[in-house]
Image (cartoon, rainbow, N blue to C red; front, side, top):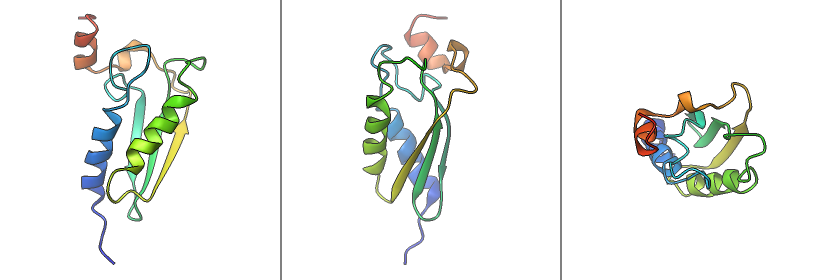
Length: 106
């Protein structure tokens, strides 16, 4: 059986996450700082620890499903587990510099 290159898969997973957008903010979820951790194990299981901008976010139902579908499409990914957490809570300080620039916050 071929060995899975977790580093390559992780880079492709991050690219997939950058293609997912919060419907209320025109910035991808990765640059928004909604993704806290991504782990790829040797079996191709991807675990994503993330949050949403608010527990009442209208995308709470649709966004995790979109993320799972896009990450599952990455070659070598066998399974996707999304751990939606509220601690630590998201706030604008978690956004990347690029996201703050895009939103005119700098």
